[in-house]
Amino acid sequence: MSPLRFPALRPVRLVAVALALGLTATAAAPGVIRIRRGDTLSELARRHGTTVAALRELNALGGNSIIVAGRTLRVPRVPVAKPPARPAARWVEVTHVVVGGDTLIGIAQRYRQTPEGVARRNLLPRSRIVRLGQRLVVGSRRVAPATAAPARKGIRRGAPKAVPRATVRRLIEQEARRRRVDPALAVALAWQESGLQMDVVSSTGALGAMQVMPPTGDWVSRHLARRPLDLYDVEDNVEAGVRYLAQLLKVAPSRDVALAGYYQGLQSVRTRGMFTDTVRYVRNVEAIRRRLAGRAATRT
Image 1: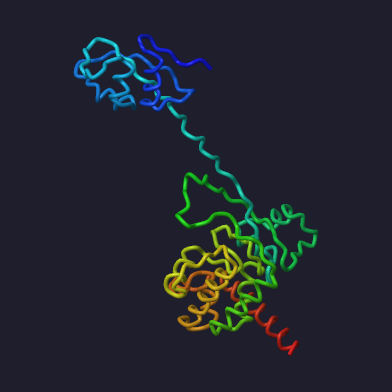
Image 2 (image 1 turned 90 degrees about the horizontal axis):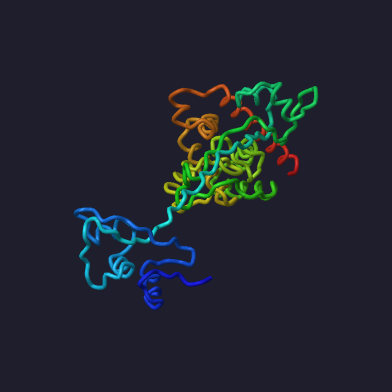
């Protein structure tokens, strides 16, 4: 590519101009403006995104900064950058993991769907029987572009990584014993919440095997663990959920109220009572706990 050439400028001076203006090989050629009354070289430099020294070089003004209204002045053209394209919103599927006590009708009501629609979407048999641990698509939700609601520093997006259920269960039992919580109860709660699956994110943003909401995780980190807990990490997720359950068991008048508080929020339970789906949730957890406790007794 041949070097840029301007009238009345020697090639040596072109190098100085390029350095002063920060031009690249693809920069636009200078433009011409008409000086108006009251204009100064410093004001024009600011207005056009350049420097006084660069304007002096480009117009062969030397050390003289005097400009005259009505005359023309050469200024560098600054390319206008196009704003980045805004990412489009997308739709993601909302799923539900079938746990003990679940029925198609109950699942459909929980997610404000029709049983027929859920059955058709998941190609269920005519009997409409759902299997324990089965993952059902129960709707979809709109995910806003990342630029519309940027994540806070240190907050991750997406789903946690999958972890074998046996590993999740072992970690929950260990943490429950550490916090003096019935291991069967803690495992039953996690089974009801996620089917002991770590790579689960609810439609409301609850994360992981224990389905801990980020604000709850922040609270547990500050007041109970006294260290930052990463809900995307299986060990921290389990610790957050079991610590929170242990705290609810301490302050709630009964175990049923503690379990309801985990699902609905303890303050809501105290002021509004248990919702219908909360009652069903508590019964399911207790049914799973009894089943797990019975298996443990049989093994011993």
